[in-house]
Length: 226
Image (cartoon, rainbow, N blue to C red; front, side):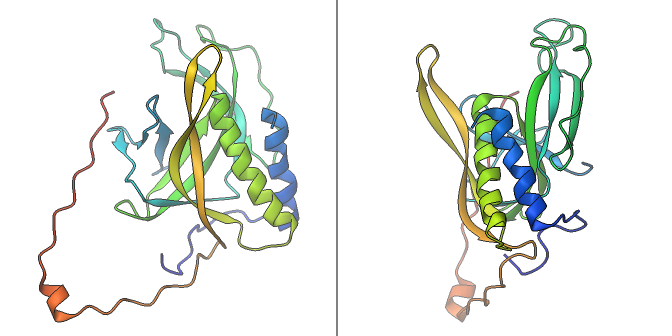
C-alpha cells in the first residue's frame, strides 16, 4: 500500500467519541454512490457487485472506522414482492442514535430487522481502490462487525491513532443445535494503521533477467450464479 490517504472526505470525530460510539454496537447485538455491495453467501464465499464476483483470495481491505452505521431493514417475502427485495431501510451513523421506525412495510417477511454495516476499501490485490459497503442482519454477521468495532474502540480508548484495521475477508463457523454447521463472516485483522495509511514500502529491485521472464496469466475469478 502507498502512503496516500486511505479514506478521503470523511467526518473525523474525536478519538474519544469514536470509542464511545463504537461501544454501542456490542450493546445492541448482545455481545454511497460508486460503492459496490459486499456480502458473504451461504457457502461462506465473499462476493461483490451485480455480477457477484468472488473476492480475491489474500486481498486486504481497510475498514473505515468512522463509517459504521446501524438501523433497520425490511425484506420482501417469497412471493410478492420477490424474496430479497428491500421494502424499507432506515440507517444512521453510529455517532447518531438508532433511528426510529414505524410499522413494518406490507409483505415484509420478518418485519424490521436490526442491521449493522460499515464501509471498506480494497488496499491490495486486483481490486485496489474499490470501495464497498457491507451490512448484516444475521446474528453471526452482526457479532463479527461488533467485535471489529469493539477492537477499534479499545484502541481509541488508549489514545492510539492507528485505528484503521486492514483485514482479510474470511469465514468462520460454529455448530448450532438445531441448524447444524453455521457459517459466519470473519474479519481477519492483519495490521492496524492510521487514516493516512502505512508508510510506503521501498520499490523492489528488478533484475534484467527477472524483467524479461514471462509472466503467467492470473486465473480469472468466477462469477457466482444468482
